[in-house]
Image (tube, rainbow, N blue to C red; front, side):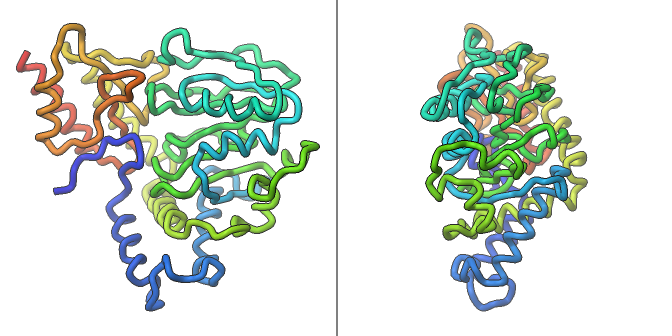
Length: 354
């Protein structure tokens, strides 16, 4: 029996995508060869790469607007380093909203001065700080749009006169936003796009080539752009699966369609968290994430029976991160609404045992 997957990542993918991807591992497009056997420079895989890049730009509304899409390796963790390597000449600003922001800040400090424009550390990152005063002399401002560990999300993108960079690993393609506000954004595939192993970077070309340092080839966005994501052997299976997922998104109403779906799932779960006497939400209500709902047991309640109930119901991946404790329901794009409904039923069943 297929379980109800609330894992924070690697996470759930659409069933139709899983089927097509698994078939391609056996025989890709009738070639008599597996997708993972063919040359990454074959016309068959080049078509996959081009399709994936085009879809990424189309879905974000950036096609023909001076942006390019790259599919690279190393996850968002490499982008913490790579973005600063390519863009930080003197001083960069970061809005610190938790663990992933901290990691990005650590890497950026290797290349220049880093200013924490705002931070929510004072409340264990359970809210999004405003960042109202953004210095005008920054090389860029970096944000993490969604925070998987703490369950917070930027509901409004900051207005700034400096280049805006974002780690969107856990909410890319989940809602309608003005992606043109960003000069560069990146996302590991393993939340809303595909399996782990590839990272999408979308960059406005005009912001590159402005630092004076020599950048190693593997860290240089311009090198990868000139090679069309083929400077080294790309991770063919994650890119193909990401392409399939982006096609699935396009076929199902694009970002507007998936946003409606995601908000319905989130509303079901948050409404129950707020209603149910056994649970307390972690994140500030105005900053709650549509992707990761974090909640704890009310004071004095033993969760053993609840843990047994959700495990028996076929729910997986509900345990919260150690930084927050409690529970985390990750409700990424492919999670069906039936899974959210089941979780609510289990929460209600637990309350009746108290």
